[in-house]
Length: 566
Image 1: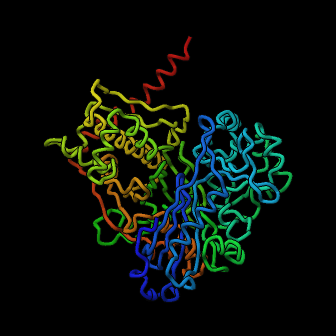
Image 2: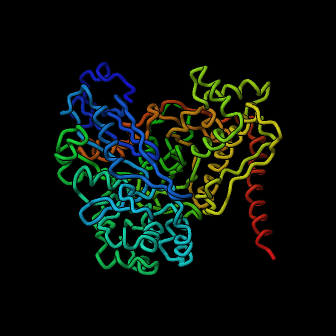
């Protein structure tokens, strides 16, 4: 759906001083998320001029198996890019950037889709990022204690690519593995589809595939885990040409891809980013002068970007490598060139809130009331909480209701996919008040999870003062305020809510040569919209709730030990 009227916004742009851009240069950013493909037309100041989105299919043939189709996703890319350039002079478009979830795309030697499922359906040729089928494989990989694991917090996640590749070799040898010619991270698949260049982005390979920016692939790791096939063919199936994000690929957009996307052939196409990293790029470099923030005048390393959608990613950068137990990285130049990246994360956040709210007995009533008011269910819940809080701050409604949010295991900093969700303080009533308070407790639990990640980062050597939030959940004022109150840090929201798309467009701008560096593009194209400060008078209450939060996981581990005991 096209959300903005194009023509009034697109009067001849003016050149920004000192950037060398042509007047009225535009960039297209494409973001492939979990449930939809989104595109934006962005100018050289980072302003979104047009936006479109298109849902994409997902299949769950069995529990913890999540699949998508690369053909379906590419077709959706064409739908949204054609919409955002309607009515404009396409000759002003200078660059195209892609970001996507770190899902695994499998193609044969002729670049045709291969099935990643027992049904043999080759249309479904993507194992999604949140797929947890490779539990036994990741357990065996972690038992090797190989040196490459030091750069993933000491323990590899089931959501990374090595365990998924091993699963394919062990489970779909004939129908998939033996026929495979190319294994792409989804962002790299998109840049290949646009340019015909199979070069991979440093971001994907370093963050999800164990590649090292300094040393390249480690032969001993792949041999040790039983994937020596890659070493034998010089890594041609998973990438032996690697480029930094924002680098220009080949001769730009091919004529065929240009037809598919409705864009001019030959425009610059950038080496891609994972979606969360594009969000980090879109927010972390913003000019914060005049907002009374501690990070003003401090290095960019004092900022933590939190990209929160279906899941949440916590991006902290440093000048020197910092090893944080249970947190991915340090990865060199994986998001901002020249800086080391540590990446914390929570596997389900937006998905968890939906799960809790939609599964409640009062959800039909909530839906009906929200629809009658032309509100989203979350806007309605937020106003309902304000109604029932009486004289106290809204957060105090959960004084005896506590949630541990790891319904899909813990990514960071405990790196334990066996952990489960917990709720304590339930009553017999199931009315709208109960639903609203459970929703609040869930949002708070996600914020406490962020606090736990921040504590792990700081204990290892990061020094953080400010959160920069973007992604779908950052549009929810309750979610934002709870993150400020619970972490005790101010939260910066971007002027453009769609920071992930701005990040993708920044890549296109870099590839076009209009900016001298990624850092220059970041500072020019990301701007502060709003700052939310913590309510420091509520600190004591949240400190107590945080103590309970930590007790919950301690108790869960005790329960597991009791049940395993003789």
